[in-house]
Length: 636
Image (cartoon, rainbow, N blue to C red; front, side, top):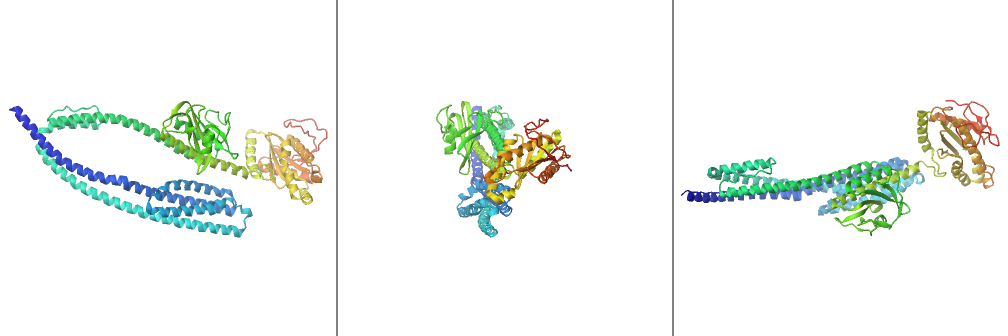
């Protein structure tokens, strides 16, 4: 009887549970289907679409800001001729590069293809017809009318770009509003349907609960206890498995689910570890990009990129090769070589070896072992060396070479990060090289190839500060070519320029490596003598006077070209940079007043005999022909 009752009870409970499960399941599935379908549409269509439009809208603004910075910098440069204004141009160039990359997704929308192309065409016209030519225009040789016409044409092109950009921005805003409106309507509708079905589900569940409560309280409590433990993180918890067969089966499934969750936790932990590693590498790329984008020092950029390459890739050695003007690859950094050195093989021909082929063809190549043939890299294969080209636009700047003693495999994510690192390195290297070239041109005299007056002012401040800090002597020689105007008048300005251009060689023969000669202006030169007192400076000045007189004697059939020199030193004649140059200049004018072709020191008047030997720190024997150095009183 009890067995029959139990069978009847089981059957009745099964039927009740079946009906309850069917009703509740249908409602729950319908609710989940509506809700899930809504959010699937939102997540799969609306959210990416809206986010892409918003990102594209921001990219358009970035490009416009970059264009404004470039135009402002170029106009400032054209108006003043001062390259300082070009800093704004290069900042804008970086903004445009980032904005163009981010806004490329706008072209995937049919209604934005036309405006996007129109904006890009207007932008490219401004670059090719005005922006790029503006960099090549020399203000000194361009008339006012031509420059005004050129500026007006640039304004017209820029206005066309702004009109196209504004049209694209307006259309993007319209698309964003349209997408968001449709998204909100869909979400509200789905929430309303899901809410109604949820209420119905609660009513059905409550009715079934009343009939099942007495039979399932204990096993359900057991299941709930187990689930709470699992929810708290205890994946070893298992249900007791009491109650009707159906609930025992649920208990068994719950136990299986707990085991599956434990396995999933282990898998997710591994995935999370990989994600953290990838995030760390990407963070490193961001930090490296931030560091090198603000640096114009090629060595610093190369060292930062090399260090990042080691961290990202797992290779043992990273080298950076740069393509020079002669189309050869030069090694600028090797992580296995001490700071400041380049190693043994410092130069490669394009097409030579792994690095040369990557630099020639602009493709990522690898070798499976040392000395093997370079081939296209296949993700997952174990390699001994990898060469990643550094590319800016369509131009190859150099190559990142990564090597390991034991072959290793590089996964796809690491390879993508290395490509990103190479791209950032290429941009930073190009900027550093351009800055170095511009800096050299701004501090070098074009005729004599000597440092100019601007470089003298910078060096003089540094050397005077060092002299005062360490109480060391510092001397200055001011030199002026005698009767240079007469040379120009008689033999022509070209002959005068040739004479001035040869002064660099004359200085090189008479000065130490630690001394520096500058073209001060016109036919006037200045020489800084480090670790040299006034007496030793007078010796150098006399040797320099003789070198000039002998070198230019009778050039082009003229009389001897001579020079007058004034000498001053710290601390005997001056106390700072300004008074040092002033004292040497007064001594120079005193030398001219004394008949030219002589040396005058800015010290109390006296006649001395000096030697032309290179010793500078002690008194020496007189030369074969005594030299009288006329002294000019120093005044501060």
